[in-house]
Length: 142
Length: 286
Image (cartoon, rainbow over all chains, first blue to last red):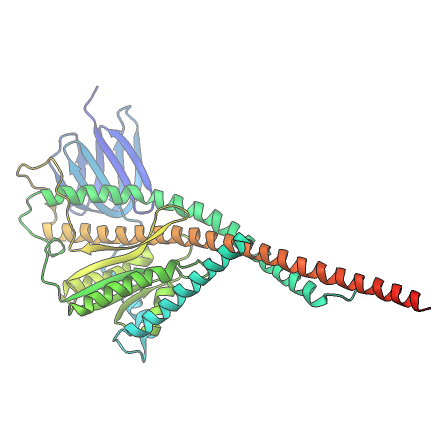
């Protein structure tokens, strides 16, 4: 039997593929790569494209990834696929949106955190919870 | 019969409330199951990511990434994950209480604080209490998407890159089981690498294109995946806490209905007794 290499393809939201393969093809940022067993350790970014896995039985399975990372160890290949499409300006837009939301909420608010007020409010909430718990115990005993 | 009309109305209204709480309990139970599945589904990625980071920490790169280097702490950042909705018991208050205690500790040590909130409850809490909030995300829904978190995470990473914060923590509820959710504060930056690996000999990766770019991309994704995991876990916690809270509410409504029914029956019986007494009294007077 030919030598095989273990392949894991995962995305943040689910596991996509796990198993042995004869060879793995992926489109890295610097060009297409083909990984055979006992490849030297490699870490690279992936472009959006196809990841093809050549199974020991001879068939090929292919997966589409919208970018991600490829890690190669001599006997393990890990593809960390992105679930979101990434681009620098897209990310920047998201940053701005997050900041905007924060600023909107914080308008005319001091940036100094009011410890006393916060603790008072939390203490109140906790006291309420405890009162409810006690009440429940009392009614439970009855 | 005219007796106890108010009590009957009251019973009816408590019964209606009980119907709602019971429905919410069942909805939360089914949502919790899905949230738990989602939690399990996101685990392999985090696991693989941790493996790769572990390898990376044991490699001997020519480039030392700032995310891996400790530096003197003058200001820390917190990413706070909370729920969007209430009616989930003490879930959010317990988390905030733990955080406020830690923040106070930091302030006493002269360390400044920046915040980033995920979820309406944290946003509302810090809007009332003040505090420097750098970024916000909310309305993530029942199936949170990693995409919606990129913004808030990047806000904090940028702050870290610019030296505005020297440490980054993630604050969320850890899902222990349905009955227990544990408020947790976890350090994310600098990344604490575990060095219990066997690959101790001198080696390094080939990096394509540049070590710096590849590592930045990888570590950014690592942080994002941790935040995502926290969000998914917190969502499961929210549903579990809501389920328990709504179960308690339904039980309490049941007790209340019992009490009210007893009161109603007593009033009815008293009215009947009185009527009989009046008839008997009237008959003997004749």
